[in-house]
Length: 348
Image 1 (cartoon, helix red, strand yellow):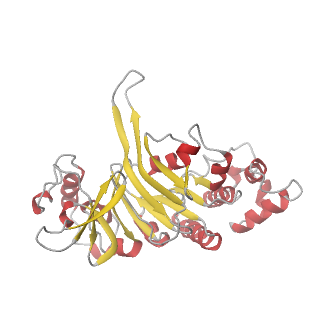
Image 2 (cartoon, rainbow, N blue to C red):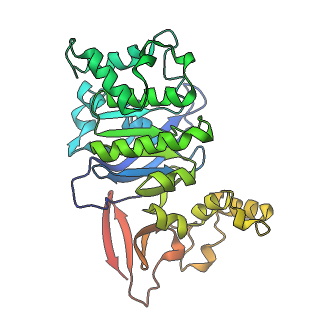
Image 3 (cartoon, one colour):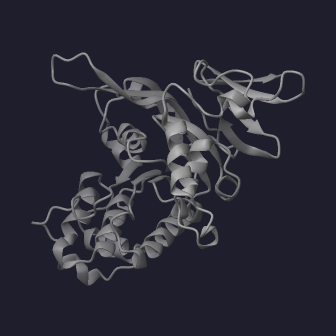
């Protein structure tokens, strides 16, 4: 089980505890299951941007879809501003929850119906959630377009008449229409040209700062995570393995899997020293479910016990779930153990 804690003392906008998700595979009569989420804990403070990074299949989008109530979790709980959502709304999300938690999808064209004009996509949430009166509808749509730096003239166009960057800005405007408190952005820039990505990232950051909106930014792009997010959480095989302040984590990666991800980022200063065979060997060691090359350096084999989170003494906000960083039994230190989705700090 894994955990992150908010960097502020305020009540979190989102508080996730022990969230699990398993999928049945092989048909209706099959008993085979695959675990997508292994019991994750996460707090997001008001106005905070948390980046969730990892390879494809690590469980990032599954977590977002569970939080958006597009998938039903198999276990665990999550609270929105102190309200237990799964207990209060067991049969599905209420309209108030849909208003508070909005999702921006990866493909802006796929999330916009091609038979409707752009104005329809902004008008629909405004009317469904009663955000404005009928008389103020046109002004509200124009204000939303202004927020995302688009001309109101585009309201009369169809999605195919817009560029990829413009379509994604429309998706952002649609999410803003109902004044959300949390936005789940599932790789919102991965299908955009490199030249327009920075504009969309700046837009999302400015909106979060100006309106106090929290964001879970899901990406496999470490560069954009470093640029946009306040904190980075690294996810592997449905669990969190490392988290910390963005600049610290990128500059001082601790977990072998995090170092593996960073080794795949193009770096001109690394020319001549990057060995693809070494990276392949490193990936095999990390991904293997039963062995760990680094386990021999710890007092207990990671493959035989469940790793717990440890705080790096030199970076107190930087935590890593790896036996390599377990304090020695004969020296003072602090290890973080988890029981029933709660943190228990034990001096060793």
